[in-house]
Image 1 (tube, rainbow, N blue to C red):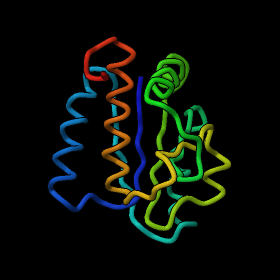
Image 2: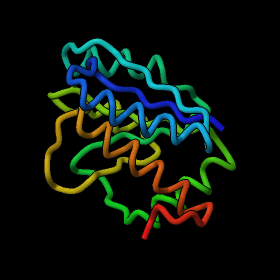
Image 3: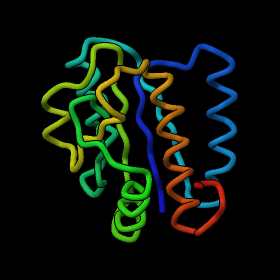
Length: 144
């Protein structure tokens, strides 16, 4: 099973890079994870580039503060069900958000809550929640 995470912009801070490297290392036990970084641009140009990377067969999850919120256990159940059927593609937009075209392509618009996070922090939160989901699925002690 493959997870692709499409992000706008490059990571800048070493601490962010270190956190993501740690979760990426942990995730290799459960899935093939590919991070795709795209150049920051206008929201419409970013959407065009993102849509080129999303396959027709993907279950596409777009992160947006107006999306659906899920408890970690519910997110784990979603991951378990979807990974049995399709590859999952997560999309983290840039600083100006996600276009309606991307939201229309999404199979799920997901939110971490009403707060706004930088796209770099969103990467860490997503990676941690994906890791947490797999440990819940496997019954491992990370999630307490």
